Image (cartoon, rainbow, N blue to C red; front, top):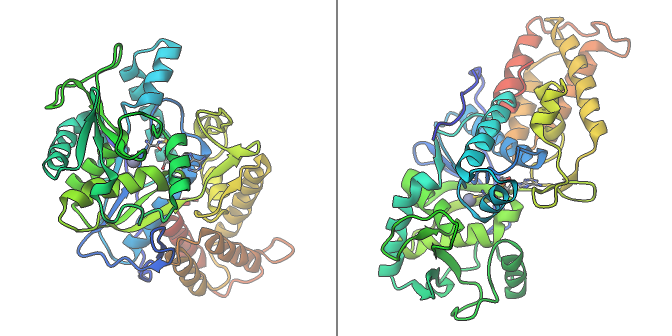
Length: 413
Ligand code: 5CA
Ligand code: ZN
C-alpha cells in the first residue's frame, strides 16, 4: 500500500542522546539498542471512519520516537498496518450500504492526508491486511505444524497454551484477560474452545462476508495474526519496539507476540512493548464505536493550523490518559503565534541549552511536555514581559530553535 509523503526534516548538528522508553512488559525503562537500523512496528487504523484526535495522539507519540532515533543517528525501519478487512469495517459498510473496499480506501486516504498535515513521518512499509493474506497463511501453517491450532466448526483457533510466555507482555491476571478479551473482539464464551482466551486465526466464510481461499477453507484472517505476520515479514523477530495505544495491550499485542514466539524457537517477538495513553472526550475514551469523536480533518476544514493541533497534543505526555478540551486548541493557536513572533526576531536568548533540553526530554521516554516547556521558557526570555526583544545575546538563536522544533517535535513554524 502507498504510505503518505515524507516531510523535509532538518538534520541537526548536535546529536540527540540514546532513547529510553517505558516498556509495558517489564514495567520499567528500556534503552532499545538497535542492531543496525532501529525497527518499529505501530498498529495502524481500522479504516471505517475518519482519524480522530486519539489516533492522532498515538501516531504523534511514535513519530517522536522515530525522530528521536534519527536525531541519535539511527536509520529507522518503520512498519504500520491497515486493518482493511475486519468486523467493525464490514459492519459499518453494511449499515451505510457502501462497498467495504471503497469505504476502507476512502478512510485510508483521509488518514494519509491527516498524517501529512500533522507532519507525521510515514512508515517505510505501509501494509494492508488484505494484501498480506499470503503471509498470514504462511504463519498459520507454521503454527499448525507446531501444534498450536485447532478447529471449532469452520474456524481455526490459536491455543494460548502453546506459548510458555503467554501473559508476559500484558502482565494481566486471568480475570482481567477474560474481561478485556470479551470487550475487545474476543469470544470467551464460545463452546468448543480449549481455553476461553484462545483466539481465531482463520475465520471460516460467513454469508455476505468477503473470503479468500486457504488450506482451512474459504475465510478471512483473524485480527492478531495479521499484525504478527506483517511485523515478522518486514522486521523479523526481536525487533526493537512494538507500539500502539494502551487498548491494544491485551489481547492484541499479547496474541501477536505469542503467534510469532511459538514458531520462532523461543525468540521474543519484540524487545519493547510501548503503549500510548487513551484520549477521552465527553467523559469517555474517544472511540468510533461510541461516536464521541473530534476529527483531525474537521479541525483542518475549519481553518485550524495543523501545527496547533500537533502542539495541543504534544502538551500531553504520550503515556498519560487525558481528556480533550477544545480550549487547549485555542491556547495552542495563541502559543504558536507568540513562538512565531519570537522566532521572527532572528536573535534571541541562548539557544544551545534549549536545543539540549528539547533533545534530552524527547529521548527521555518521549517527554514532549517538558520539551515544549523549554521552548516556552526560551520564548519568554527572548520576548521579555513587554513582548519586545529582551535578550538578543544569541544572534542565530531563531534558526537553531526552528531546526530543533521541526527535527525533534515535528513542529514546522
Ligand atoms: N487496526 C487496529 C490495530 S491493528 C486498531 O486498533 N485500529 S483503530 O483505528 O481502532 O486504532 C488505531 C490506533 O489508535 C491504535 O494504535 C489504537 O490503540 C489507537 N487509539 C484508538 N483510540 C484511541 C484513543 N481514544 N486515544 C489514543 N489512541 C487511540
Ligand atoms: Zn495491530
